Structure formats: structure tokens, C-alpha cells
Length: 254
Image (tube, rainbow, N blue to C red; front, top):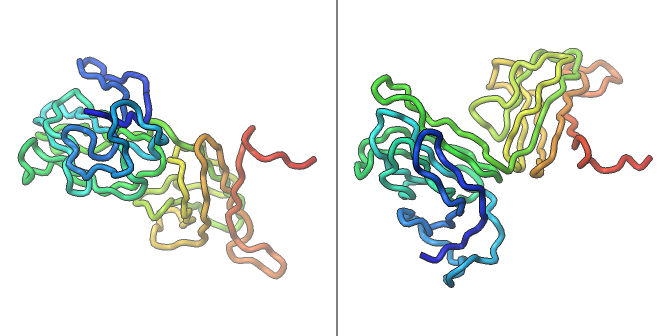
């Protein structure tokens, strides 16, 4: 089957298993099991395409020892069939954004192992099924493999409580319970455009400030919460300032 070969990666395998992947990233509809309509922009000729590497690609690892072979669906369309324990798929190209990943028993669409909506940024991901069916602990574990940026937060608002930082209306904060004077560790997040919301710690229903950030691949960024939450006359209001850190930052002009 002619392949686009969007990107060549190092050979990958599962420890203790026998399966490896070739490192090929399959374009939409190119994998044998991928029922999604093929991207009409792909070249049909044999050999590598001249198209750029995909912004987003996902593979799935089956690491649940008592689970049977499974099929993988993206937004209701099958992309992989009969994935057995201790194996993983090649990378499959996706469009950046929200997608529903469904895992069912092989050839049994009515037996759903798990189903969840994910937001995928401009990065490569592994979605690993871990845990056990019998104990009810099977769940997806999402890893960012490549294409991430580093982000940290500094709480510099003296009258603000401890805060949580949420990105793109996610269910869980990317930084949690950050108190005045504290700095979080850097966390890896996909390169993407973000709507970052500051909320009181443990109170996800209240947003005190928001900012839009464009975090570019390979960069390191800091978000500073500054100003007064309840300013007196002359005080600066609470807001977020973002900086690009380290050698990638623009010269200061001095």
C-alpha cells in the first residue's frame, strides 16, 4: 500500500513484548484498518509524499493484561482492529482539536471498554489502556510523546487566594493550588493556542482572570499572576502576564 510517510521516527516497542512499529505515521485512511475517508490531498504515487509532517498524531497501546483484543474508533470510525495485549498501533494522523476515542471488544461494537473525549494539540501522543477489566480499573493513560512546550506559573498577586490554572476549559487544572509567592514546576503541554483561566483553588466554577496564549513548539513559558484582586485607588488590577523564557526569548534591546 503506498504511504505518505509523513514522518520517520525511531523504532518503538513495548518492553517484554515482541511488537514494534516501523516509525511511519499513517495519514488519514492509509492504515489497513482505518475506515476514515482518505485525505484527498495525499499523493497516490508510491514513495514518500512531499507534504509536511502532521501537526497531530496518536497511537494506542494495549496494556491491560486481562482485556481481550480490541478495536479503536475515532469519532465513531474504526481506525484499528484486533489490537492484542502488549502491542501498540503505529501513529495515526489526526486533526488538532477534540476527538472521541472509543475502545471496544474486537468485532463487537456493543461492548465498549472505554470511551472518552480528548483534546489533542499539536503534538504526538500515546493513549495507553492500563488496569484490569476484572477489577474495573481499566482506564486510558495519555502521554505526550513529542511536540510539547514547557509552561510554569508564578503567583504574584498579594491579595489573591491560592489558584488553579485551567487550559481550554479542561476538566483538570494544569497547575493546582498555587499560593501567593509560589512558582510551579514546568509542566509539558502540547504546542497550541490556549485560553488560560485562573480560578480559586478547588472552585472550578469561578474564573477570576483569563488570557489567550500561543505556545509554540519547543518553547518554555511563564505565566505571572500580578496585580490586586480587589485593587484600591492606584493599584493595578489582577491580570496575567506571559513571557517566553530562556534562549528562545527575543533580545531585550539593551
